[in-house]
Length: 104
Image (cartoon, rainbow, N blue to C red):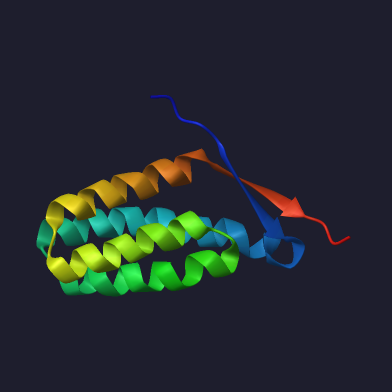
């Protein structure tokens, strides 16, 4: 299965914030990997909750959905699901491109 680009349209007033937001999510991938290895599911639950809350505000519904999954998997202590979600987040971040929506 090849990587397919995902285009996310963001409002112009958010455009300057998006690169840092996405870079922080890339750091989250590294942090999730570490926390899973360490079995720190409470921290993973909090991280997922934060991603769930912020993703949509920046226009990234998929990040919110992944965050919700991480939150739920963390609460269950589900290492396997957490690993799948982390891979899903990494793949999404690798494929996403951003287009700025200009005001009409």
